[in-house]
Image (tube, rainbow, N blue to C red; front, side, top):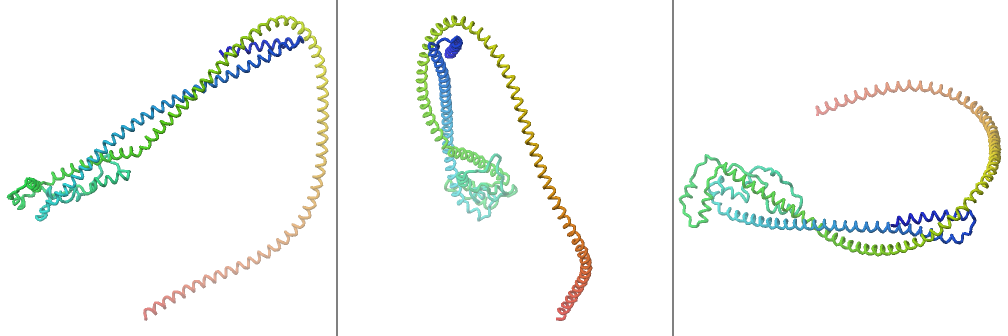
Length: 450
């Protein structure tokens, strides 16, 4: 609608301009048409301004809607992240409770083993160290005297300090020697076993403990049991490390939950602000629509006025044709006079340019002649100076040549002296070496005599 109104106003403005041109050519009074023309220009400018304002308002409203949609999407993502973190925290709490249960179980197990170890001290009196009870007495872990064991596959080194402390507390000593030969299949029963068979037990617990202590295990079964126990401990160790790593990673990422909550609060505030801005923009758009309706009414009134002017324009066009014929005749005469004037002006302009060029050439030639005279004087003066300096240089050259001959004769004499001195120096060095050898021989003889 606004575009159509704008086109109509531009069309009528063009018509008004044509009408005013006709009136000016006919030389009619313009008091009646001035107000109409100014009013049309003002309305055209207002309509353009309103159109630009409406476009800017529409763009701002679209941006506000986009911001609201983006805030909603951010809010949904934050809610999903919060739900995921809550589920992860619940899982870690469950795993932490399981870890605490395993920890208490292992502590109770080690306490029971330590209490049992004290009951099998009597075996050392007979020298038995190849049975299961002897292995239990060697420590909490029955594989200390074996060689170093490699870490199982899939096991990584712990990185957190708190996790390493917990590991040391739970698995202290598990990386010690694994197993060794505790006996052979050819070992026979001895007096200790025969005597223990004949003994009677009052208590069921003591009877069970004695039965376990008297079990005679060979090397193969003991190795298998030790390997199975160590592998079970390794599996439990890996699972506990994974649980602790996940638990501490989530404990370390707990500030993320606070950041998400703060971000959600900020998004809510942004949504409220955007809603307020949207309401204000809507009110402004309503006002603009009211102004648009008023402008449309003014345009309708102007259309009526323009129709009246079109009727008057038709009557003035006939007068315009007559005036244009007269104007063409006058323009032809003016064109011929203008051509003659332009020809004369071009000739005078060319003559002036030629005179200026000649004056500039004269100035340049005089300047070049003066410069040449000055350079000639300087060259003559420099030539006289160079001749004097040449004579002086020749006299100096003769003196230098005579001095050079004297120095060459002196150098030849000194070279002969140097050669004789070098020969004497070499002879003196040989004598010095001979003297030193004689001194050494004499000192050695003196030492031998003493």
